[in-house]
Length: 249
Ligand SMILES: O=C(O)c1cc(C(=O)O)c2c(n1)C(=O)C(=O)c1cc(C(=O)O)[nH]c1-2
Image (cartoon, rainbow, N blue to C red; front, side):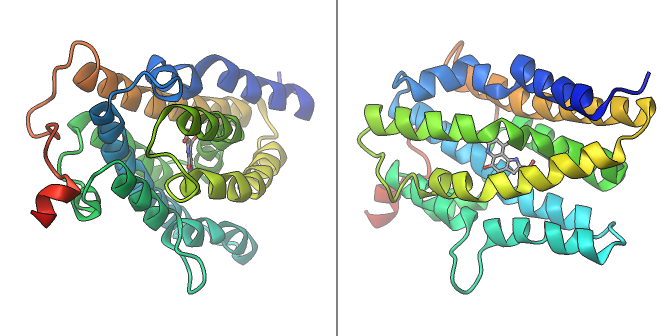
């Protein structure tokens, strides 16, 4: 049976309550101060791959949208990450974080050393958005409903527990707190408006589940490579590589 708007929204929120990556042990370690500097670096290097792919994902989405109104509402997402004349954008802010943890930002931006599992997961998200219905693509972005809480927890946890954390190194997350709410309000309304049959509601819910899997599997890979059992896959970053001071020397 088709759910009411309220029931369907509750179903989407329940997916986040059960599956969002704020529950992953790697995030508990990171936010609680339990990561070594190299574990933080591994996270920054791999997560950069997600950051650098998000605008490509949004460009893939927009290339398929026929409605000028929908494209206009969506395009600020690309500017938020790539920047404008007056805003450096999220990718540059992420590289500030990379510098603050001692990495060479050029190394991080090269995406060398990113684990294969990170690439598989993130590339699958870009392909999903390119190939599936617009409804599924917008629904997949709705993990951002749950992101403000994790960003706020992260800012608080990193500031409390790590010397590298300050307003400059954490500016990425501070900015997302301002940017994400408008995106997610728009995306949620769009999905609720368009998922008007049971079949479409199921498609949208499954798209959101897929996206939680994309996020979760990245952290599983990070945990197994750099925490326990510490099995770094061939070709992935080894502690000591890509450091800023190695370049200066
Ligand atoms: O730190 C996080 O946990 C987190 C999660 C997500 C998400 O839920 O996909 C995004 C972000 N951050 C983020 O910063 C971001 O710009 C973003 C864009 C998107 C998207 O799917 O379009 N998700 C996310």
